[in-house]
Amino acid sequence: MTGLFTLTPAEWTAVELSLRIAVVATACALPFGVAIGWLLARTHFWGKTVLDGLVFLPLVLPPVVTGYLLLISFGRRGPVGEFLYDYFGIVLSFRWTGAALSCGVMGFPLLVRPIRLAFEAIDRRLEDAAATLGANAMLVFLTVTLPLALPGVIVGMVLCFARALGEFGATITFVSNIPGETQTISAAIYTLTQVPGGDAAAGRLVLIAIALAFAALVASEWLARRATIRFHGE
Amino acid sequence: MIVLSVDVEKQLGTFNLAVRFAAAGGATALFGPSGSGKTSVVNMIAGLLKPDRGAIVLDDTVLFDTAKSIDVPPHRRRIGYVFQEGRLFPHLSVRQNLDYGRRMSRRSPDAREFERIVGLLDIGRLLERRPRMLSGGERQRVAVGRALLMQPRLLLLDEPLASLDAGHKREILPYLVRLRDDAKIPIVYVSHTPGEVRRIATGVVRLEAGHVVATGGLELIKDADADLFA
Image 1 (tube, rainbow over the protein chains, first blue to last red):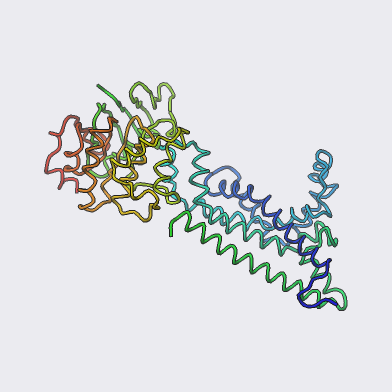
Image 2: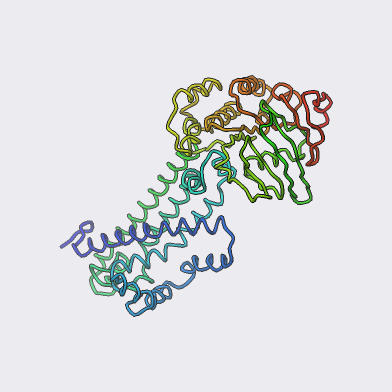
């Protein structure tokens, strides 16, 4: 008999899997998020509106649709999935890595938006000053632009992480609901609510989900404030 | 001896800028009313604004020449630039701001040179502070130090006193005079204040409405200019 605060091994697995998927999704999405946030903030090119729309699509599409699109393109027989398997031996469908992909895609709009706003808010005259002091374009970006945008990058990462932690629709459509492989907290709660007597276990996971979400919010607040003090003075 | 020669043209909206002058060593003042194109000219010298036509030559180096398709990017021009608003990096300490140019050009630290500049500008007790914690006058002194420590071949000062009140202006002027006499770096000094120019400049280029109207010595500065340019 398990109490309210002791999890069964299966439930722990779901928690551990959720965290791993959310961390990997956020970490892999980050470089793309910074690059695309910078492109959208600083450059004008043909097709920018299309890129802008594509990035934000997962926010407005039903998650099931996003999951289905991932399934037909990244599945074993999908064009991208087939390519990844043939040339790199990578399989995403029905694996936790596939769950990380769908979580990363779903969290991407939330990652890009604050990063883009942070880049737009930077005083570009500081970048000119850096150039006169001998910094080439890359060094200007690394020593001035990126540090000044860091609070926005942190906010984006936390939002993306939180979204990835709670993702359900796209993930279950793309990689199904396999215990130990793709069954995250959300998927586990959904399963438990479908079986008789699952309420207590579902309740425990719900508490965990609330605690994780709260911890993520507190951490983001703390990190963003520290970065703001560090980089803009108190 | 000519150190810097500038011959540039640029159309900025309806404003036509066509400026031609040569500067010797010492401090050359670009003197003229607000909106006469002074800042645009120094931005072109620094490489931050691209002329439509013309040439800019510093010592024996062609920095810009449309005829030869030469346009050296700002980070390779080695021209120190002190901006009107300082533009210190808010995320770096004063010491890191001062060190920025040296780090970007990957020179090894030179403690004696650092101490000399810090002493010249009297900013030793500010080193660990952030720019936000500095007064306007302190900020401009640090900006001057940051530009000097990159070992520039030319120093551009764009109205470095404009954002300061009278007291702070009096505080900084002696440092700038010392800089002119000690540093042996040619200076282009942008200003619309006759008193300032008289204290610092050794040569004067008078600008009006985007064109040079006179070049010469301090005799070009009239007291009446103070009212004219206000």
